[in-house]
Length: 300
Image (cartoon, rainbow, N blue to C red; front, side, top):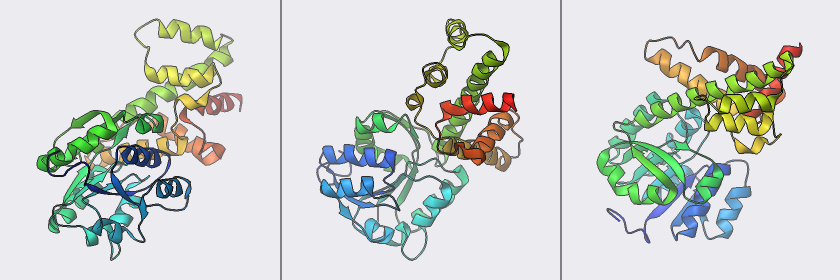
């Protein structure tokens, strides 16, 4: 392994939710030494500690103990709060350490953090993820990495232990840019399919027959299948992505467009629907359950 001996690299991991917890479990199964820091929910954190991880008191303490610092958090604000301040990651970074942000953040936030990390002699990579916690547990994530190429080359073997498809995408922020475009497209398709099933109900056609016809042509996609799993088969688990998180990501896409000086047209419908569903009792539902949102809207 270039830069670090795999058996000796010390990794600090912040954010042990479902995805982060699965990634930590994967790293521990491969023999990595981990220092961990969680938030309110201790289920994944305590499990990691039981497997031998060390719990840090602050993000600064975690950084001081680590060659590589990984974050898997919900928002740019969460990442910034852990990175900055007297007890933040940046204040404790070792010279030459590498910070990897696995969350879905705003590209501008990543670029600002990368500058601050560089000022203390370390490196920042944004590396948002594709796929699910189940894939993470098996090391089969899609990882969209950008930032300093030398830092990427150094940490790539660790990323390869976590991902089936590890991409290097250029300058810092490019990973989050592509992830936001990807999620905008995916959530647009998901909402369109959800409304299609609801429209089938309104017009008196069978949902399964609608799916069979659509899936036989060029419209067929994995996202269509995920929504069909709930809309036809009543299984929301195939797309383990909460409506509140989808609303956040599409909202970030809109902010990215605005920061680039353009007005996104296609995002308006999905964002309005996701925000409305989130604010009216469906925040924790999975995205495939947007079928219910459109059904209720058409009934009202």
